[in-house]
Length: 252
Ligand code: SF4
Image (cartoon, rainbow, N blue to C red):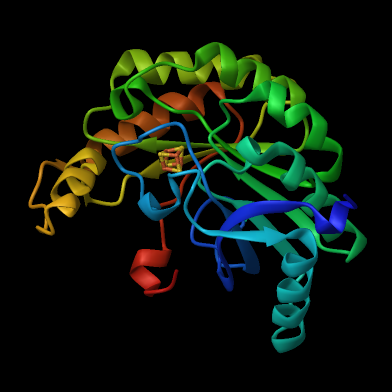
């Protein structure tokens, strides 16, 4: 099978404003791949979690769609996002190569938990937005995976940490240490969680056709958030608080 005939599962392809992280506010094309192994309490893409969701799509189909979106509106960046795009490693690699051939800047949004899957695609990736996932929100730690991931993406990466009212000092300490040990030290974006009903409740109540009414995942209080920023900033050179903006702008 040629690379352009390779197929993967894609849930959506669209153009919008980037609503998070260091590229906030930039118009870009999003290619959202299906499948994620984790269940973050604040996840806002539950429709992309199953590996069986979305549509089977060839690399050529994605190229056609992306080209036509660029013709409608000038834009230079393609975000490969999910779900967890690294889980479709071969398809993702072919997409990144194709996007580079089309002269796009390639932006990979990832949970930062699969260092071994990053290795084959890092050369085709211009910028990695990686999460440091906190056990209080995801249910298990990934400290070693995150440290390895930062090593592999060195110089091409910034870190995003979603903070909730359940974020602990110990989690912050582990996150500082991992970011501070990387060379070069990456920029760190502290993202207060957008208030949302816990993922598990949304999935369970959704099955009954009922609208979930809680429990809620909430951001830290403003004073706690500032305290968190100050603690990071004392030890890292570039730390910014950037909330999710697409819910406020009313875009995808
Ligand atoms: S890693 Fe991302 S896609 Fe997966 S559950 Fe967490 S927020 Fe959702």
